[in-house]
Length: 340
Image (tube, rainbow, N blue to C red; front, side):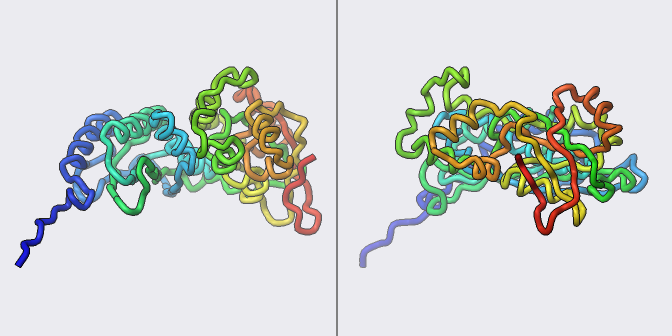
């Protein structure tokens, strides 16, 4: 009888030693984010002591970076997407008025590459430190046969807290309220599947190195601009804010109505801010309809602040980059967004 070859996990494509090496690399970085409220690390679960609040409400969110990861892989610059995932999640819970407490990440790929994972975590750690958020855990998964060679996925999970009396839920928004827009730092983390198609990036990645005078940088550098975090600048203005909308997937149409009471709509004046060059380039290069651009991208506005007309000047004083981009009106039939 012919003897069968001995099988191992490593031969199946999963290397436990590499995974352990990565955990050691991550542990050194994670320690710099830990606050005194974190009671343990490295067990089967992480413990966080919540204190100093009267009626604390926990706010959680989970999200990914999408196909922006392909650009990061192609350019071997993965720290930027680590920043992206934290900032995206922080912005999401900020829309409820919450401050970040702790963060967890999930990184999965066909074959674990220590330096690539370390680069991603470096970005995550940097962004967590910026907002005093503890990176309390995560998972690195090696999944041959699920992910194609050279690809990976990145997901972030965040938990924050807000006093019950300070929750921002949009319930007090009324017709006549003002919308202020805060500028984005580019595409943030949305629309990359369309961008890849427009520029033919999957077929010829060399286009990422092309310099565009209107951008002042290469296409790749522009596309990897980190997702902007609005927490620090918005926090002092939160008592004056009725509603917040993080402009992510779905653009204005998919996000502003989420914070509006029934019967109200948003009237946006697109001439009230300058559209950044990257969006004009995408539209021209791909012959994309303007309506589709506003449905897919943030078009240069990463966060929308809703407040009274009396409070708008006070908020602009705190946030000089904020611009009035429209107002809240009574909805006509089922229309929730009007852009003209």
